[in-house]
Image (cartoon, rainbow, N blue to C red; front, side):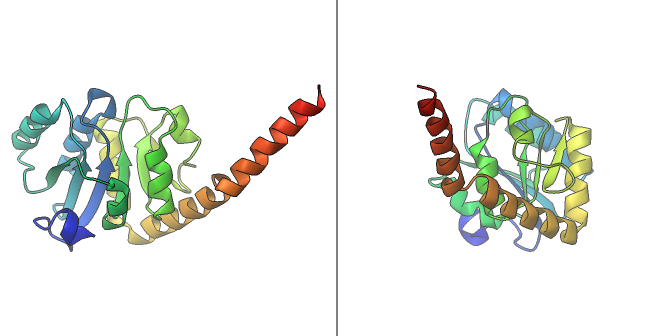
Length: 188
């Protein structure tokens, strides 16, 4: 998956990946600034496009991160590339229930995400990922923990994958929806 997604990025590096529109709500600027505090072997790849592309490209150049931060652009069926990443990042300042976190979790990825209500429904911080205030400093600290500790990455990724399979499975969701309708119908 790495060679197909970004053949120019060193495959032996630690890949932090994100999927989301290049829009102010997604807060990619904080993620780019966080990269300045991470080890040089760390790469950030952002899949998607949007109105902030030019501003983010300027920010990348300003911090001299052009060899470490990659705006991949729009990619068809982007979730199939999740397995290329070592860590998944969602630094949004505003989010509903982000399905991309469910997809990343099913792929067994540890996640660093903003401490927002929708994300809190999926991530148990310290167990299945890390939720932080989405500032460059706090994102950098959380990402640094996972970049430097492969066993923590593996443990959190596996725990999140198991949690999502149990909590968000189609069978369970159908069963709970049916139970809700059954209770409501019995009330007449």
